[in-house]
Each structure stands twice: as C-alpha cells, then as structure tokens.
Length: 281
Image 1 (cartoon, helix red, strand yellow):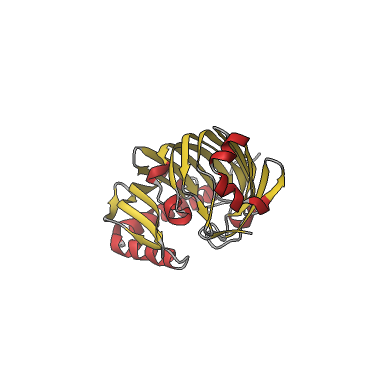
Image 2 (cartoon, one colour):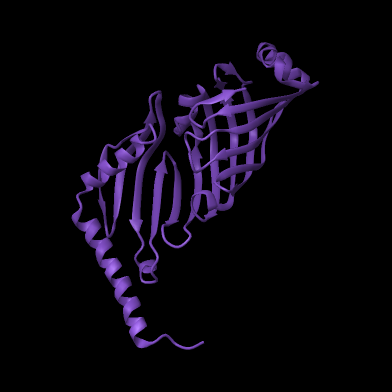
C-alpha cells in the first residue's frame, strides 16, 4: 500500500485539528445554561421534563449535573444523583467524536461511551444499582421494587440500523403491588432475574428473560422499540408458571388473570401499549 501524499496528511491533520478547536471553543464559550435549555427542549419533544439541582461545565471538556431527574405527567421516571459527560480528546485526532459518561444512582453506577461519528456505537455498563432508587417502577407500574441490578451492553450502528447485545442480572428481587393498566400481577420474591437481549433493526428483542422465584417461575418474551421510545409500541408476552400453593396464597389475583390461562398452571399475558404507558391486551 502506498503512503499517503504529504499534502493529504497535512489536510487530514488540519481537519482534525480544526474540529478539535471548534468543539473546544463550543464547550468553552457556550454557557452551560444554554446547553441545559437545549436538553430541556429535547426532553419536552418526547413529552418529558428534565430538572437538575446543579448544572455546569466539567474539566477539561464536559458537562456535569447533580440531582438530575427525568419525569412525565405522572412523576419521576429516572433520578441520577450525579452525572458527567466528557468529550474524549484522543479519538478526535483520528476524526472520531466520542462522548464518555458516568452517573451515580444511589450506591450504584452507570458508565458508557457513545460514538457520534462513522456508523455510531454505544458501550454501557452498570453495577450495584438498587431498583428502589429507580422511580420508573413506582410511577409506571405502581410497584414497590427491590433488588440489585448489573448490566452490560454493546451496540453498533444508529437508529434502525443499530445491532448489538445487552445482558443483565438482578439479584435478590422483591416485586410488590405491580399493576399494568389497573390489573394487578402477583407479588413475588425472585432469587434472580436474568436477561439476554439482542438489538436488531431498531428494536430490543428479548431472547431470554427469566424470573426464578419462590413458588413462581416467569418468562418475558417479545420486543421493545428503541428508535421511537418512549412512544413506540410494545410487543411483549409475560408467561407465569405458578406452583399450586403459590396460586392458593394469591387466589384473588389469579382469578383476575383467569382469561390469560392457556393450560393448567400456565398463563400467557400479552402486554401492548408503550414503554411509558403499558397496557394488558
């Protein structure tokens, strides 16, 4: 392979250097309050509100927020005690724009890297996140949720062309008071909830999501939209396989779910609607 001509190398370095100078100037001279207003407007277009206790710039090229909350008309969906995003400098020299972020949710943490250039990509990892620190469950499903979440994901591509995998595990889970469109689901404790998910054509496909509990085994299958979330339509089925003694303890709830009984001891519950407003079919 022939080496690049000298003038090409100079041009490439000039473009990368110019991009670095432009992005640096943008982060240095645009007020943090203006960036915050842009983020608030972006959330508003999705029917969401974004608030923070503190918002400002982070050294060297980044932004930080404290007490960040995302909510809809019913209440908070997500709360971050602390969040920071930074532009990575070294990838810029190769003509790539990569943003690194980390956040604290109670005693747990989330970290990730998002590439905005080329075909795009996202790497995500989370550990020690307690479900009780995520208000989504109480706001959307009226649930009291406990457990410790660990996850790891890798996505390549953008929008409808995105593909990748996501694995998660929740340990020592306790779910109480879960309701979907007003219909209660059984209260249960689960030793683990494990999931292996695949991203394809803009949807999150649940290849294997199992809930192993005391007296109840459950499985969730189907797919969730990523491109149009939170307004995209759900296509999920929740399977419940309770033991007889477990059914006896929560007889009233299983009477309400009787129309979803397919074979003795096996319920299949279709879940439609959207992520923010799920509905039982």
